[in-house]
Picture 1: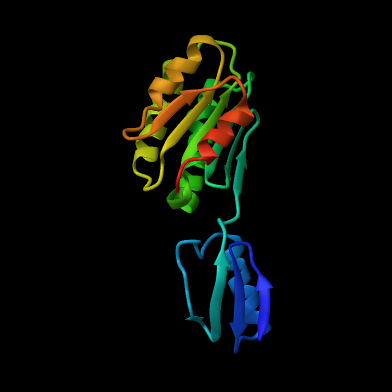
Picture 2: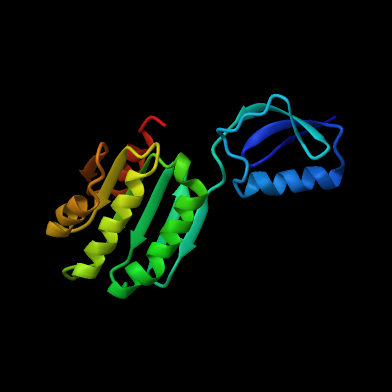
Length: 186
């Protein structure tokens, strides 16, 4: 019998070879076995698995020159720096956003967005935010959107990312915004 803590669960494995266990661990690390799938016991290949506890799947991070998107403990954390080109919102960040949702969407309870862009945002940026709102609306557990931005951008972004049934709130402190989103019930 082997006991090992994986990225998504503490497991007891019986009747498995080392190769089988390594394969299972890869599935856990990459979130292919979700926290919501509970096996007690289950058989994957020749491994009998008993899950004794579960935790959230491992995070995921995507970055560009002036932006970062990260899934962390139920929250999609987005940072857009002052020097980001508006074209990067749709051409780079949005495809990365969709990849994160494809992998972790069922576990996302909300988003925290830091927009440091100093200039007035162009229509193409607001179009991307509205597409993101549509994607968030399709997630089963999305409940909160938090925003940190300067001046009127804060409120216009909040309106663009209006998800039916979810709360939106603006913040001055990004860490407080992230914590507020994390407090949502999964």
